Image (cartoon, rainbow over all chains, first blue to last red; front, side, top):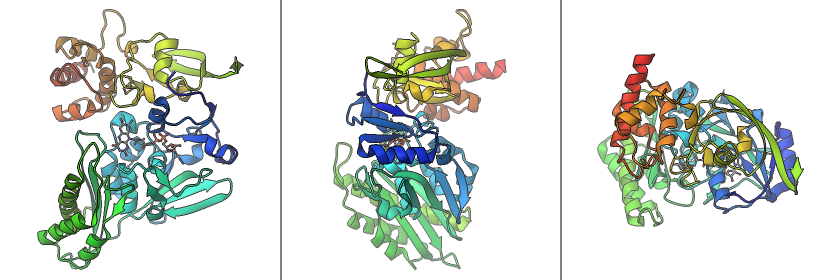
Amino acid sequence: MKPARFVYHAPTTLDATLQLLAELNVDAKLLAGGQSLIPMLNMRLVRPGHLIDLQHVSELAGIHERDGGVAIGAMTRQRQVERSPLVAERIPLLAEAIRHVGHLPIRTRGTIGGSIAHADPAAELPGVLLALDGTVRLASARGERTVAARDFFVDILTTAAEPDELVREVWFPSLPPRSGSAWLEVARRHGDYALVGVGAVVTLADDGQAVAAARLCFISVAGRPVQATQAEAALRGAPVTPATWREAGALVREELDPPADLHASAHYRRHVAGVLAERVLELAARRAQEGAGR
Amino acid sequence: MSTNGVERKRIRLTVNGAPVERDVEARLLLSDFLRHELGLTGTHVGCEHGVCGACTVLVDGEPARSCLMFAVQADGHTVETVEGLATGDDALHPLQRAFWEKHGLQCGYCTPGMLMVLKAFLAENPNPTEGEVREAISGNLCRCTGYQNIVEAALEAARLMRQLS
Ligand SMILES: Cc1cc2nc3c(=O)[nH]c(=O)nc-3n(C[C@H](O)[C@H](O)[C@H](O)COP(=O)(O)OP(=O)(O)OC[C@H]3O[C@@H](n4cnc5c(N)ncnc54)[C@H](O)[C@@H]3O)c2cc1C
Ligand code: FES
Ligand code: FES
């Protein structure tokens, strides 16, 4: 058998799950969709003594409108999010980006909470959550707390969650009026992890001719999703013209410091990040103008 | 339940329409359960970490990697494998017929995964474009065919299935 032996738990309530997690702590791993955890178990990269399967904890599933945004239970499958009319209407950036997560047979099992908790620096959903300035609700036997995306992602596969905490829900705010969003990425093959990916939100001024505010977040360029704050600052008040997007792209190349790895050199990543920034801002601004709400 | 200190769990599921009940170790992958416990060796295993798609089966009608699921997670669910496609020796599923006629396979290693992914895909999209077919099979690797004939077979199967319905 591929994985080493473990004790399997299948709690049916959140309380029972949190109790187990408090008792077993670092000796336990939560099993959500298994699309990242089971490969690591199969390769014996991790050997937890206990596995706590979350699939029967019904409190963790579901998509709801809340507080001017959409709250998604941790165990909601990525495929359900992709198919949700509510998500398509209210959080179009999430609907657009989630199609890039692996392949369909991965997304039928993979969950929203699993992707956020796993915090792979090349994963789309953490980038979307940061771009939209969303939050993560954590639960433990000690209580609950809400952490902003910018504080949640710490480093490669590392988050602000303690070993006895689980991701209960992820909240994505809807866009303000006169805003558009867009997601773009470059990957070697369809469905592969992105070499560079970027999400943008552009909010236009009342007259529609200038940028009131912009958010620009990259994945796969550091140990965690990164907000291009200098480019964002320069975009504030800038006219809606190709030169504005070009300048933002140039700033992105200066402020990002991507790593080199097997898949791409640092130079290539920096170049692609600049090109994608220009394109994604243009697209998001166009959508804002068209009032498509995207 | 425990024998020799090894914990086993009773699972009940439906495989290709028939009820199945077994005691399994929790770390048994669904792919190994199908192949070793049930003898359904049509489900192939290639990479065993989710990348190749050879092990794809349908769980509650949706394609999933059986190498990235434990058998215990399938408890109470419905699983379909390539063995469930044909209704008899002489009654190949339209997908199988199309793969045969259009030469959609060479060694056949990727074929069960291709067929299962396409079964779910065509149920949702009975009249796909070539581009949509290519995207549907993008998570399934084939080392032989160059994909061209697989795409043609999928389009042919869609035609056959539209005629039948
Ligand atoms: C071939 C392949 C390609 C892929 N491509 C991509 C891609 O392009 N982009 C992408 O983003 N992802 C990709 N993935 C990963 C996929 O998106 C996973 O679904 C996701 O990373 C993890 O979600 P999961 O539900 O499967 O979690 P699991 O694998 O079950 O868990 C992952 C980790 O998170 C922990 N965890 C799970 N749920 C919780 C929770 N509620 N609270 C706290 N901790 C929790 C687990 O203990 C584990 O450590 C790919 C996977 C495969 C196999
Ligand atoms: S064997 Fe399961 S995806 Fe390769
Ligand atoms: S036919 Fe040989 S791998 Fe596809």
